[in-house]
Image (cartoon, rainbow, N blue to C red; front, side):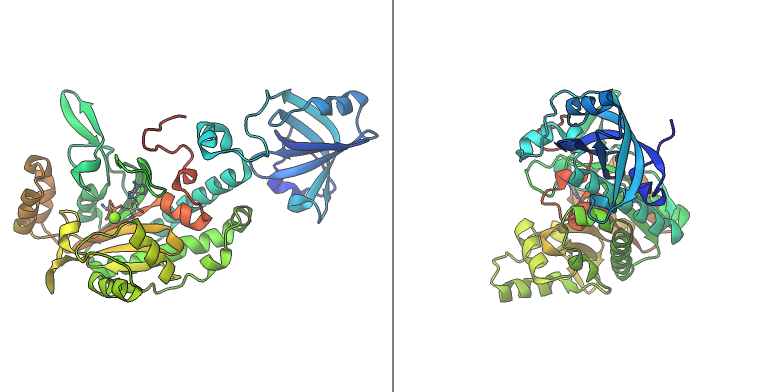
Length: 430
Ligand code: 4AD
Ligand code: MG
């Protein structure tokens, strides 16, 4: 039997269609039963009158439980009062399977319970809306870089060394050797950028983050562009254009989902170029003005990100952090060698760091020294140093966390709702 998707009902007014889906909710009033059906593309109410269907079908309606799978056939009617704007006058209902008592009911559930049932929770309206926004963001990310001549490269997941510090490495056995799940594709991208000019990688990255926060996952997706012949200013410009591009795309294509999520859309609509740029030394002064206690020389933590997110209604680009708190590959600012040519982009409304990036150290001798200072295994970085031996150029790039971006655009309290199956501290089920 042919199938129509709920999203396409608008093109089928007056026609008879069959929707294949699951029962979302139902109620009845005397000789009429209302079956709300979802099919992944939307929800539609089917109105079943005793006079329109066979007595068996009408009677069967009582036994259809929440999340039972079913096919409903009926005529599409435009109705402004109906959720979604359309209703079905039902002629037939075919049950595929009667669901057992469904654990997630319209009443409130605790998050622990919902996470245990994540495989079912994703059927809920808000969760499904979040996953659609995520998919839209992924498409926007690919379009942005593909349309600007960046070449997509896939960097390895199993790696011999750390990129972002040794404390968050996931170790695996590799034929009697040690390997680590990648924390970032950046180092490999520095090689691909020297080969292809402008590249990006986009895939899962892994960090054994030992603290429980609402912004950290053990497995998260990151998109990382890398550009040969680029400096910190180029990286900052690309970052802000990229973020605005993503927002515009989501506002254009996923407004309905943002409404389902009750997102304050105006807060997203006002995001404009250029983003404010604040150097670390300037930030220290601002913290003093705001009366926020912060030790000069420290990295930003969640409290600082929250304060910054409250003071600005735009993403803020904090640049030139102290070298001491940043990764080994950062290039020092020639004007002040204690500061790194790097940038963190902090989201408004307390959603935290979206992007980390900057200009890379391109001098062989300096980089050799840095690898020693950071006590990194020289052997594993031999190939990386080659990039400074053979045609080294100024270059840079950044990494944007996909789930952080989804959380911000959807207004999600917790990043765990921004990936289909989150991997969290001590939690790997389902
Ligand atoms: O700032 P990070 O650590 O930067 C890098 O990994 C660079 N090597 C990227 C580059 O220059 N190519 O991570 C980049 C972004 C963060 O700004 C944040 O959005 C996200 O990745 N991120 C996480 N998201 C979820 N859970 C975690 N545990 C995350 N750690 C970082
Ligand atoms: Mg960072």
